[in-house]
Image (cartoon, rainbow over all chains, first blue to last red; front, side, top):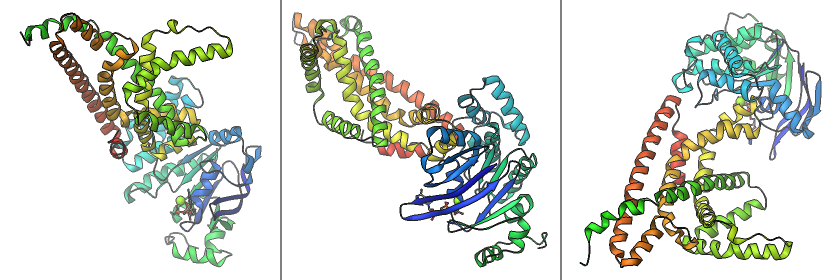
Length: 251
Length: 250
Ligand SMILES: Nc1ncnc2c1ncn2[C@@H]1O[C@H](COP(=O)(O)OP(=O)(O)OP(=O)(O)O)[C@@H](O)[C@H]1O
Ligand SMILES: [Mg+2]
């Protein structure tokens, strides 16, 4: 499982995360929703140490440490065992789709090149890009780039996958293909997935638990039915009434 | 005859015998300068305490003094430092053991690095932040990220200004007579000293330098164009433009 206890993060005087607690089991899909600026990205970035949290206890697969006193080895441990999928894909632009995926396996995991390439091919097939192995990112559409990025993160066999608005930068017609890939990955149930998304239908369908974040605090934490159907707080009620969940989902 | 045009050409082969040493100095000093410039750039970016101040002083001092003075200072200064060192630590390093080319390489590369560090810094900072974060997120260490992502990308960005610096370096080698290294210019002066045909000699030298720098700049252009094609294949270009603008003055 991956667990946060009392995670806090401040930028100068601005307390962005005010003590976040949650637990996600391996195999579980946790969705984080909330208004812009509520701290969703910061939360994910703290888990991957792209931002350094100020306080809190982080636990991942049995290893637990104080985030305020994270050692180099703690940070390396978190980065190796989690993988981030970014809103803007962030593919290595001078590397082909295949090289983007093998990079981590070769440089970080020290796997032999041939083995890494074999695995990368499998992963590209899996995200439906078997015919785009040697393309540079600029020759791929946004949706294709994001699928490469998902394959890249899977290559490292992370215990937890962190997805920060993976479809927000995409043209509408490409959103579905990426969501489908994410759903397939989620169905494997072999890792925790923490996903920040504004696609409420998608969240409703895929998430086991939903967390509603508001000004750096967890206001709701429950099943999609609980959070969307019967929010306990007024803030969550307002937020959910504003996002349109399509009629297919009767609440 | 006041000016003997034939002499201008008949001496070219003789002078060209010293072309290898000229290029050795230019290439060697440029490579050393790249390493120093890179370290200085990192210190600047990271704002490493103390080192940051020291390198700022080094850059400002080097840019603010003539290269000829720096060459003399190196040539005269290092033996003195060595003697002081020997006296202090009881060692017996001999100045005569140092080949003159070392003084030339040292002075030229230190001078060049003061300029190229700025271009390298701009290039490193033009590398897209998102790719660095992606590298970190897949578990690459700072050093791995530097080696695998940042350095290759920033080299592409910095190539135009580093290429200009290399051409400057080729011309700069003509000053190393100060350190008793015999390269094309020094040898030319020695030749001219025998018959006082200085003007012919300087015309010869001018032609040779011009041809070399012309060829080198054409080659650099080709390389740049090739990289640009790769880059078009790889997308991007915005970062490069920013860096080019930032390094224009260098
Ligand atoms: N590096 C930073 N320096 C200073 N402030 C920051 C930094 N990163 C984020 N913030 C601030 O922290 C707050 C939370 O930002 P964050 O990006 O986590 O929000 P978010 O919930 O992901 O929003 P969005 O839905 O727009 O992506 C914002 O007010 C933002 O301005
Ligand atoms: Mg965000």
